[in-house]
Length: 111
Image 1: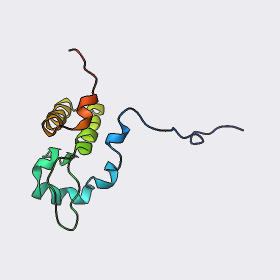
Image 2 (image 1 turned 30 degrees about the vertical axis):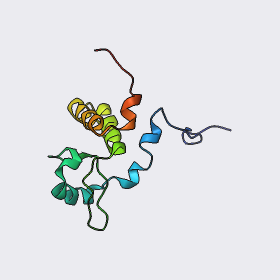
Image 3 (image 1 turned 135 degrees about the vertical axis):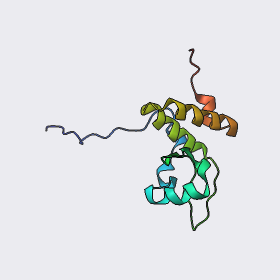
């Protein structure tokens, strides 16, 4: 039997998968980002382009406007992958100010 491309699924995730579980259901989608940006511009790391949201989406017209640790982690990982170094640094800075749990688990690297 020949194994196809989709025949085997990868199990589990990496070291930090618990920090972003469920974020995909809470993140504001394209249509919701405009409303969120008007009410809470600090909810985006790239405010001008409405990219890298770090707050939960508005529910029933109520927006929390609070940075979420799982959103900051997801935004930092995406920013690092896409080589937005300044946005990755901003996410890390906000996470440290908020005392997010995942910051403690980062490996210390020398520059």
